[in-house]
Amino acid sequence: MTTAVVDNGVNVEALLGAREMFSDTPEMARFQWRSTVSWVNGTHSEAEVEGFSGFNEEQQHSKRFSFDIDHPLQFAAEDKGITPTEYVLVALGGCLTAGIAAVAQQRGIQLRSVKATVSGDMDLQGILGVDPDVRNGYSGVRVDYQVDADASPAEIEALVAQSQKRSAVYDILTNPTAVTVTVS
Amino acid sequence: MTTAVVDNGVNVEALLGAREMFSDTPEMARFQWRSTVSWVNGTHSEAEVEGFSGFNEEQQHSKRFSFDIDHPLQFAAEDKGITPTEYVLVALGGCLTAGIAAVAQQRGIQLRSVKATVSGDMDLQGILGVDPDVRNGYSGVRVDYQVDADASPAEIEALVAQSQKRSAVYDILTNPTAVTVTVS
Picture (tube, rainbow over the protein chains, first blue to last red):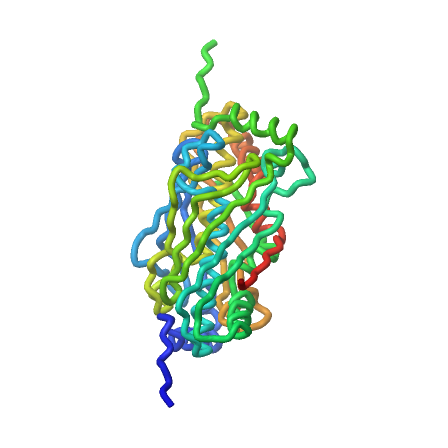
């Protein structure tokens, strides 16, 4: 019997090592992620992401990442970047997809392709203050996966379900998070 | 008396026009934002954002925007992009900052600079499944603004508070949203 080596590019040993370290030394697991957002003009701002903290130390990404955030031309803005709420969809799709790769690796499932179509419905009567009964955010978000992998449909379903269970962004969207806004 | 013309680059007339249109024809206000996320390798995936729907029609951004999502080197990943949860901070800072510019314009307050420091605390014992009592997402998020504007500290506080009140992403974080994940 020949066993193909499963390689989804995820270093599961490193993740299991981190898990063991966090279990032994829980303060190492306390991370802080950050972004600095500077207004440019109109609805256009620029976000930078570089440092974070974790493993009891200050950490750096390998480079400084920059992102433009704006509103589209259809709102008389300049469309220098995607809207804030589209960034939320990027975050959700990226989080669930990374989880699928990691869980597949751990379960010995070789992935060939994974594609998510992420969509969120929003009634703009909320943010524009037309109807106080309409919320500002998404009324609902859907993620539909197409997965090509060496696994049965049931195994693929279970893979996606496990990723959902351990996803930070899925949790952030589906459960309330305290957000404190201050002016200094 | 000389009145300086306030120009924060926000077309408030267009926004008020949209508000009136949505008030008259609520179905025009029903938007759908989208992203397509494709797995690349490991925890690295690529998100594309181009089309959305609203004003009763299919709409397009002026170009296709692409984003890399990954995990940092510290997790034995390749750091090809920021993490999903950092994208959430980008979204939040961008949303509140655009709101500040729009509200300032409407209130006749000239902004000179607006900078937000956004941070989120996350105990990775959650996503790694070490402790089932630890949530996967942020335990809390903070946004701290430094605003230089032709306004009193109280007016600036009120500006930031109003932006928070009408922010889509602030709502998405602080209140639960239904997320449906399917495999097709």
